[in-house]
Image (tube, rainbow, N blue to C red; front, side, top):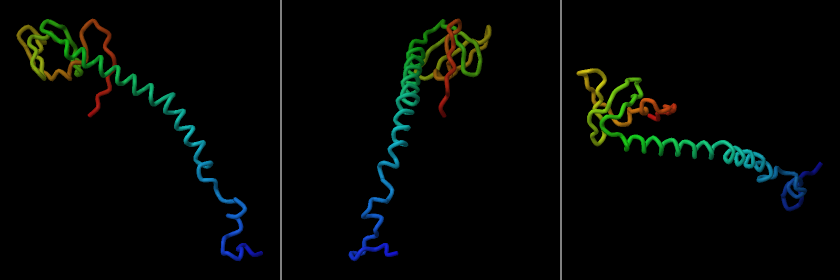
Length: 117
């Protein structure tokens, strides 16, 4: 059985018997597109919205606010600085923590926040 034609081209290429490049990957591309629009994109929007709400909460902190830290410490803000806040956690005990360590205000529903390191 001669598989070559006089020009040296294999017979199965002339007959179109090879793998169909884009046709093979088209289902995978479609599946990725569906996953992107149904799962990945909405999750990214949700994360951006949650991050924006958190940033607004952190910039709105003021003296007298009752807050909870990410470590679970309840306290009242005594002083607000650029990147830190001073919390009174007991009658004569104050600690200074980063603003980003504030999980939320007391009484408000605290959302679970994923911390990215």
